[in-house]
Image 1 (cartoon, rainbow, N blue to C red):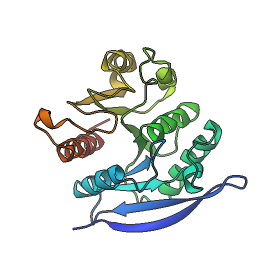
Image 2 (tube, rainbow, N blue to C red):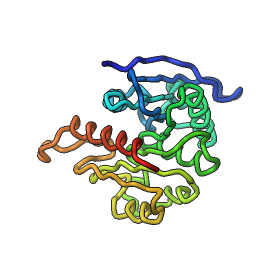
Image 3 (cartoon, rainbow, N blue to C red):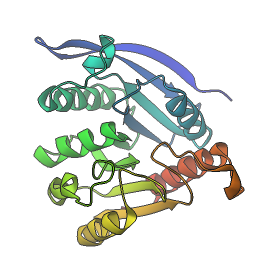
Length: 226
């Protein structure tokens, strides 16, 4: 059965205004995931559409939202303070619509990192865990992981879904980060996936296989004891 989709407008602040949101809800959901988009594509990007469909098939409802710059048709992301305010507004709006469902938050690339920064500054009310679909640990070609320093301040469990060919998260840098986080961190490696979880044809796998793996991994983690 297909997800039931609702389109919303959510207020961020008087200065920032409103942004769009989509709620995709299966018939009998087990949890609700608040999902931020990546820096270069909005909430309706085909990757997120495909991921949300697969999560719904596994009884996970998804609350997607736009960041203000994408809402206004701009290419350059907003200042970090604006992005964090948007994360908080989206989580608050989703929390009002959970209907008692367990609440999780995260995102693709930038959307996941901004969610973690918001949670590091102040816990996101009601959120039980964070899920990152391609955490952007560093710039391409860089060998530092300072973008993960704030994760030590996040108090809830975190799941990292990362491809082995991700140029924004070398596994030899990400694995020590997860080790330092201890039981709060779970790392799921998608063999052959790049930052967009595209896999090479010679791997014998398809992008659809990778999407299935992402959805199954996320859904299983959401249902696991924290």
